[in-house]
Image 1: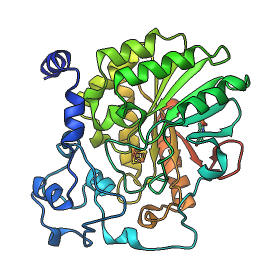
Image 2: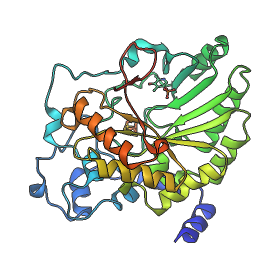
Image 3: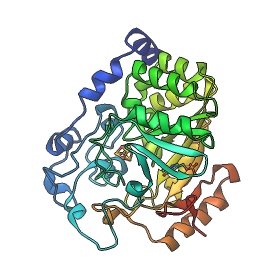
Image 4: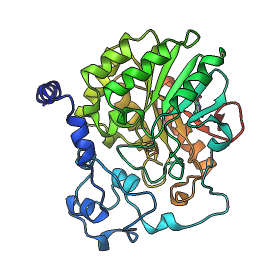
Length: 333
Ligand SMILES: *Cc1c(COP(=O)(O)O)cnc(C)c1O
Ligand code: SF4
């Protein structure tokens, strides 16, 4: 299986772009692929949500057929619960707008800036805290690079979005080249879900770019459940690690997906099978549309205690919450 995948990736390095275009965008079509009818769902579907459905077929292939409660399906399927409003859930829960210095560049934490290079993602996660973000100002990379060049306290640039790996290898190469010319930058970090949802994205060319720059590369992937990590995902993660890239994972604690000690323990174990370390476990950011995913703080702490009992310390992620205006992600204690 692995050799088959390897051969295919090597013969056609742009397979991932084809997969991206073939992503499913219709809720009914997604259900059909899973042998489900809308009446079997615990809640009615939303056929035209404000944040459109998007799921790559290879991710759908990892869902259990005929199971309306599948933890991967739950992350992507628009249901009426997301129309519930709550006064404590907002359009911009993490204060992104306040932290924006030039369009697309967020400076919240000391020494690090976050560059939102695109609004595009391969998958649309229903709980995403940037689902209402207005990305129409995208074309200001020059201003962002000038900002970074002018501030010598910045040592790390985080490419985020959206998903920076929806950019082509050529486009990324150009950006990395420009960043590497800024003398005070030491590290280049990518926050991306693509190694998990579209593992073919990890092309030979991408590995070259990330390892041949003078900047030290770090990739923070985003997996929430062990079922997301099949053999081809594992293979992609392993290739990143083998190339010398530090690979970490961040997850969001989600009701109906992974709010269960066994699920979280299995996730840490399978990540480390491929040498990926759990980094953050986030409490849900209170974004409008996601009230049904929230887990109370006390329940989250209880889950973390169970992880501590079952796992070596390095496989226990840091339980954190992003609080607008604070100098670092807040540990939950
Ligand atoms: C989370 C985040 C970072 C990175 O924080 P680390 O604690 O270094 O992982 C940087 N900028 C923004 C805006 C963030 O939300
Ligand atoms: S991949 Fe990340 S940025 Fe994109 S929708 Fe999912 S959580 Fe949001």
